[in-house]
Length: 254
Image (cartoon, rainbow, N blue to C red; front, side, top):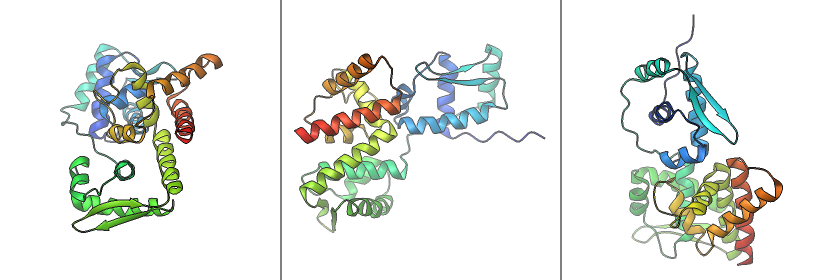
């Protein structure tokens, strides 16, 4: 007896509908921008979609340097759409790790105390969720020699030595690089006059704040030059990792 197909999450359903409608290869970075999540989250969704489609005649195709697309006849695609049925509205939901990184970025970039109310509004979660996230944030900062001041009627503020502060920023940028978000921001910088316009991941504004003062278009051009010299085209993860090393090197020289 064949096992029932695993249930798709709301975002995965919308992602599958997007692929069914476009029928042409789409790169992960583009999908990540469209759904305001990290490339890593899109990859997880694609794994779910691939498993779900195994019980249908439609196939999910993934090819490096080409993109993601679905293969199937018009009748087969219609069958899959009918199987999906009505899909509820999609609203981006941040993972605990994404919320932690955003809170850390927000605190490291701020010269003034930040309130839990402000964070709750920016993250679209309850203050109870923010308080729980702050415990994780505090541990993350302590591991890097920084302290989180949490005081009623004052707010939240990070204190510590400049060297520890720089290391924390470097570690945070590395996490954004591993998720693919750092490369995503730089890719947009290479093709848009205004980097922070239009859709993008929820972390993008905070990541841009950490990179303030850097010529992002120039950094992106440097990475593209490395591609041209080496005669290769980087994957999203490799691109993001190289961007991280370029950015941190430039910031150390600044």
